[in-house]
Structure formats: C-alpha cells, structure tokens
Length: 146
Image (cartoon, rainbow, N blue to C red; front, side, top):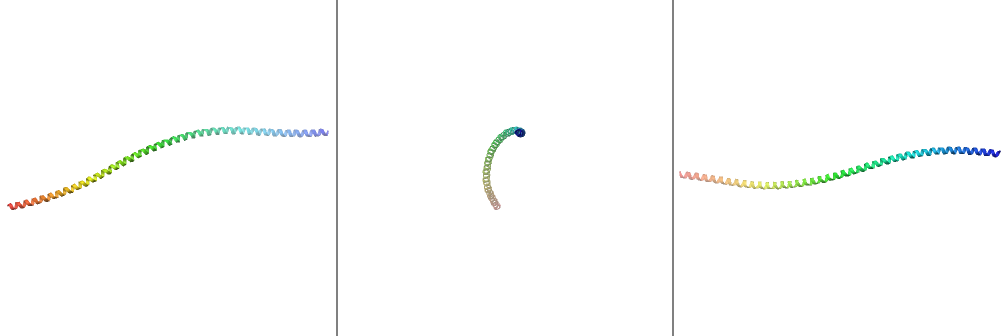
C-alpha cells in the first residue's frame, strides 16, 4: 500500500506537472499567436512603408528630372543672354567708336572753320582799311582838283 500511496502521490505530482506544463504550453501558444499577429502587423506596416518609399522615390526621381530640365533651360537662357549681351556690348562699342570719330572730325572741322573765319576777318579788315585809304586818297585828290 505504501507503494500505492507513493504511486498515487507520484501520479498526482505528474498530473500537477502536466497541468502546469499544459498551462505553460497554452501561455506560450498565446504568446506565439500574439507574436504572429505582431509579425503580421509588422509585415503589413513594412509593406505599407515600402509602398510609400517606392512612391516617394518615384516622385523624387520625377522632381530630379524636372529640376534637371529646368537647369538645362536656365543654362540655355543664360547662354542666350550672354550672347545678346556680347552683341549689345559690341554694338555699343562700335557706336561709341563712331561717335568718337565723328566728334574728332567735327572738332577738326570746327578748328578749320575758326581758322577760315579768322582769315576771312583779317581779309575783311584789310579790305576795309584798304577801302578807307582809297576813300581818303580819293577825297584828297578831289580836294586838290577843286
């Protein structure tokens, strides 16, 4: 009987241990289920994040292409403006050179006209004096004749 008592005690311990292990197994099953749900949620979040990243990447690539196109357009505009500026500067330099040459020519002509005017004035003065002398000479002669 003693052996029976020990067997019963051992049986009860084993049942208790089985209950305890089953309880732990159920607890672990719940943890595994929870982990699987979390894993599934994380996979869903990851898939969503990957989709957002792909969309952002595509949008960024489009933005980069648009910006590169804009840069090319701005470079072309800048080159065109440089060409226009060079042409305008060249035209202004030619105009300035033309004005300089014209001013120099007009200055020479003015100096020539001044010289001619002074010469003409001298001639007029000379002729006026000569006429005055001739008039006085004629008056003297007229007085003598009378």
